[in-house]
Image (cartoon, rainbow, N blue to C red; front, side, top):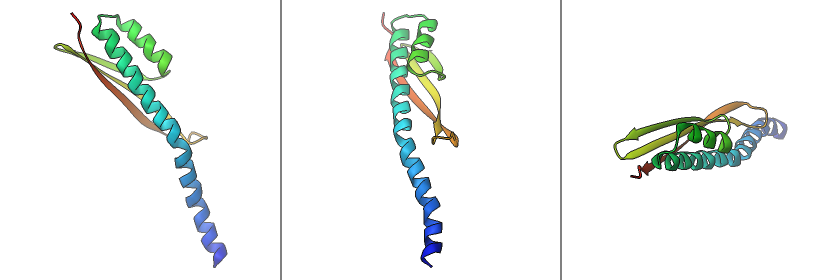
Length: 105
């Protein structure tokens, strides 16, 4: 009986360990996406060029996509990035960072 219970518990424990090992990378990517969105929003709010905004995201979070929109006196930015889960790339999760800045005169 003990052998069968152990055989069933080991895959579950491995899955829990995989998720636990992936959490720091996911949290780090989420923070990096938020940081990149904030920096882009500030650059665009100050009248900076879109190319500079794209360069900021490429430097902070390579491979991420940026969506920026001017809405009246606000600049809304969303940075989207795919993060591999697990050491063998068993899948990926999407992390998003968003920021809003007031356009400076």
